[in-house]
Amino acid sequence: MNANDMGATSGPQLSHAGAEDPYVRTADPQLVAYEDTFRDEIDAIPTYRPTVGCIIPAYNEAETIAGVLDSLLQQTRLPDVIHLIVNNTSDDSVEIASHYAGPHTRVTPLGEQSTIIYVHDIGKNPDKKVGALNYGYSLVEHMDYLLGVDGDTTPEPDAVENLVNEIASDDRIGGISAIYSIDDSALDKPMAKFLIAGQRAQFSAFNMQNLLKGRNMAVLGGQFSIFSTQALRDVLRDSHQRTPWVNDSEVEDSLLSLQIKSAGYLTKISARARAHVGGMDTLRSLDAQQVKWNFGAIDLMWPGQRGDTKGQPFHPNLRLRWFEHMSMVINITTRFLFILLLAGSLNIHAFVFSPWWLIPPLAAVWLNFRVARSMEFANRRDYLFALLIFPAEIYMVIRMGHFVRAWLKFFSRQQTDNWAAQAKAERGKGVAWTYPFLGALLILVIAGAVWVQLPIGLRSDILAVCWPILGVITVLQTAWMTIKAMKRYRGFKA
Image 1 (tube, rainbow, N blue to C red):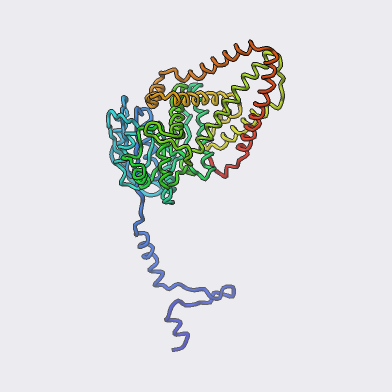
Image 2: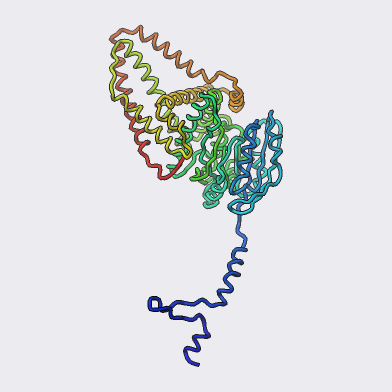
């Protein structure tokens, strides 16, 4: 047997394939035949699919619950189970949702998937949303992830898939919040359009701020967030709680986010998952919601102990909250001082207009325009809100009223149910939202009465001192707005 004979019977042959590539290895026919079988065996190996339990706390959501369930059933990645927890309801939420109860199967881009919808009517529940959330947690705590969805939130079709992929990719993540926006397509009243435009800009600025800070999210909003159940179990252990959510905080989601962070986990905002939340379309309802949010944030920020909620002023998740509140104090100071000084200058005929005064509002318009451009679903109304100056300025004044009301309520130590106050406001009742503006008007009237009693020389001296002070504050504020407007968004969309 010569060398050529040995080569013909031992292993793959080498055949000539022309001058350019003289040696091309020819695959063994037996290996080629086995290739398909090998691939089939690999594909047959089961891969672990993390389990996701979705819970939806619902209170009088008859108008929106069908849309929420439809949007969940249209996801590219269906939750393994959906529990709708109806509590304290007085409308047809249960009846509408009951049509969706049972198993559902559909073909998605990821293959055929199934889920089961359960509708639970737990009747009167003193703990309201917190009680519904904890009831839902008891039903899905054995699963890998808990997906919390509000009864008026509709996600984009790939939202669940993106959240699951992101949280499953890193065991350090305890929870991820979707990027929130507000659907403004079905509005008809001018006031509703104005308020929703303001809330869309507010959400967008908040989202972008978190996206640019390493996607760290201080608050995993209950509207559409996914949690690691292992992280929740660690929170229960570390905080000596029986349930993840507690009823002694005005912002149960903020407190849980702090606890998850304290347990050593990351709290993130998604880079891709998006959800549309319900907005407040009246001044009453917006005031009640924002006061509740601000009051709850103050409760967490303030040193010491109020009830059973521990103040944690230096917690990493609260740094952004402190900055937001300090910024609001500066905004209130500059605007109120400008009105007083302008009125005083006009009173003694000492007002002189300077073109330099146009720079701060132009910087604000530039920043608002950048915020509008950063929106994934920006429309003409968002750009008009940013460019016309006055809508954004009026909305800022409205937010100042919420801010003042929240701090006054905190320092007065009122024991009020802010959840009930919000529900009452959404029914069109209550006038508390007017109190800050009536108070501001009273202060202006008193200041005016005192002003006219002062000697003309003293009035001139006061103006000479206060105008430069306001100028310095405004210059610093304008510089900060300019820096924010110049930031690169690195491809993120809010």
